Length: 146
Image (cartoon, rainbow, N blue to C red; front, side, top):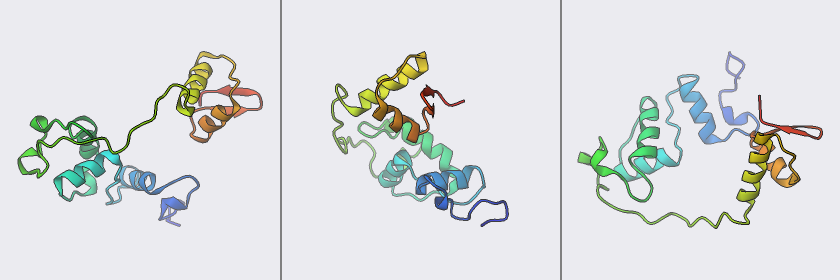
């Protein structure tokens, strides 16, 4: 354990994976580790460049708004001049299934009902939302987190 009471490796905490541990380590504790999410991973893969933790927020934003998954906006990218992937288009990594009738749709319906203060009859969807911290369950009551 670190002196502040937090473990040195935050993945020792329940439900904390590598990305979350690195993000908390970087932004909360000032650790020199780059948290790699899908957006940062895409920028790293396409540019072949290496970045330190100080570039994390800029890389999040770059990957989310400029270096998009299928059609990157290379003309707006500050890294375009030295990017070996400049101008390329990409096929989706995987095709997402239809929303209609899916568990994703059931979760969305349940979450909208909770937000509206309505009763939710889909226990499986509520349980899933609770596991993800999107709702709180107290006996029969289901509500948005405080």
